[in-house]
Length: 219
Image (cartoon, rainbow, N blue to C red; front, side):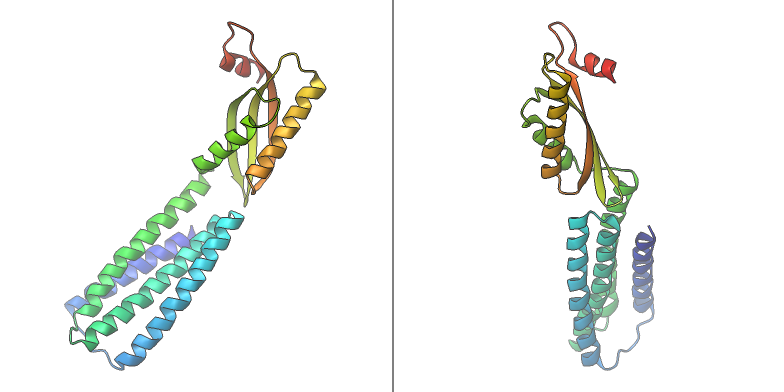
């Protein structure tokens, strides 16, 4: 959340500075040096941003992804300086503040992406694609006749699952337990960041019984 606030502060500062430059134009000296420094800043920040975002998504760290997006906003700020310097060199002093306003919009876009990702993690939201993958892994487990509720939540950088599966009512306790263990192993292979799963086997309902009612009764 602190990173989100920092990006919001960057957008506010960039927008304010651009408006001030539009209202009160100021000369820019050493345009070539400014452009060179801006180019180095943009390339460096973008490389750092890509690395942090990639690693953050691989290990399931929303904070590291947000930090990578924050580095990208710094790169956008450097890009604004570079484009503004190019405009000034071409004889358009208004280019600097106009580009600054455009970059402010880009930073606001990054702010929205970051706030959404961090907000989802704070609310224990999980990508629906992960739930679909978990259901497919459970369905493909030998002995699982149907899949009931599948619940995933984040605990730090790791996922935890709670699932209901339907098994043959004639199965012994040992067999039902083995099916649950096999289903957990299937989940661990399908979801690399899954730390563990609680799989509850329920007997297949008899003719005329409602499947969801049986699951609710056992819970």
